[in-house]
Amino acid sequence: MPMFQPSKRDGVVVAAFDGSGDGQVLDLDTAVKDGVLGGVGGGVIGAAVGEKLDLKKMIEELDLPEIPSVFICPISLEPMQDPVTLCTGQTYERSNILKWFNLGHYTCPTTMQELWDDSVTPNRTLYHLIYTWFSQKYLLMRKRSEDVQGRVSELLQTLKKAKGQARIQALKELKQVVAAHATAMKTVVDEGGVSLISSLLGPFTSHAVGSEAIAILVNLELDSESKTNLMQPTKISLMVDMLNEGSVETKINCTRLIEKLMEEKEFRAESISSHRLLVGLMRLVKDKRHTNGILPGLSLLRSICLHKQVMGLIVSIGAVSQLVELLPALEPDCLESALFILDTLSSLPEGKAALKDCGNTIPNMVRLLMRISESCTQYALSILWSVCKLAPEECSSVAVEAGLAAKLLLVIQSGCNPLLKQKSSELLKLCSLNYTDTIFISKCKLTRTIL
Image 1 (spheres, rainbow, N blue to C red):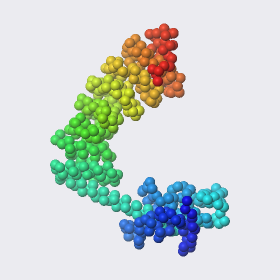
Image 2 (cartoon, rainbow, N blue to C red):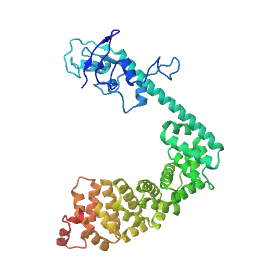
Image 3 (tube, rainbow, N blue to C red):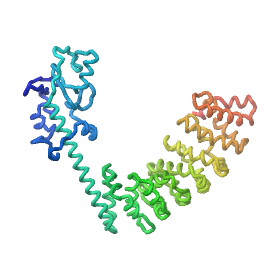
Image 4 (cartoon, rainbow, N blue to C red):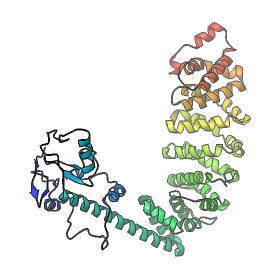
């Protein structure tokens, strides 16, 4: 642990560490030499003449993960903006040490030594170190931002004229810049890039161009006009084609973009009433080699389910049985979406029938009760109710044999939503109708089937 060596220089306390050799010093010359600042020369390089940078603003905007420890106030653990030094040689942010004194403490917070002098001395050398270090970082960030904005402008100009491979290369570079810099996203939007890139999407657009364009658009803030423009049938058709035939990354981007468009009030269900769209989504959800597509695929399917006009089409492509079979392998965040979709589809007669005809519906739903979350329990319970109500004698017996009665008792005895408890009681009553009291009570015992 290095030791403090208080010293005086030009009437200002300069606390320095000895023997560390790692740049963790507060002496200006040594700090520059050891690389803490990287050279301060005759001022802050890159600052405009007469420009005064605000230290507080720089600290907030930079939000750096790593800051030299000597710049940090031991009380707040935040960078100091007005460092002052005590008689013990320890330095603190002025406002923090004054609060410490106001609480009746007349000791040094770090060493707990009693203070023989409670005055504080501005540590101008440390302030200069802090100010210069943050200024260099801030100006570098600003220069990079300006460079990024300039490059984005150049690429947008290129896209207006380029064709073929040159257009693809420009889109690829723009995609990389947008993904890496938040300022690039804003520049694209401010300079009309959304409209320009959207204009590249059409019936004759190659997938090479389309995939890059969509990868950019999905990361941008789209206003209502931009979304309306992208909802044109020819553009949606291209997205659907790439959802079925593109790379996994492209499929995910198409899925995310379509879901973003669905947030618009003017979105019409006709845009998603596509057999090809739904089939492509189910392929993405079932792709075991690329599991990163499952959640975005289910998320879009969940949004589509909210449109009643499309629900029947989802059932008709066999989505119900496919989702039921997927349940055991899904992660918790995916499970909730899948159960929501199945529960929503169970409101249709054909949806109920499809759930009843799938042999794993009941055992999978029973297994999920009280396992993942209250929402999952709610959806599974609702699905079981729909199926058992549709064919009480057949399905109730299967459900009880799968351990449903014992699971329902767990729900009733838990601290979950009262409506869930009521629904569980009603389902328990429905299931008991096919058994004598003695036999049904035996079915309610906890067994390995419900674990």
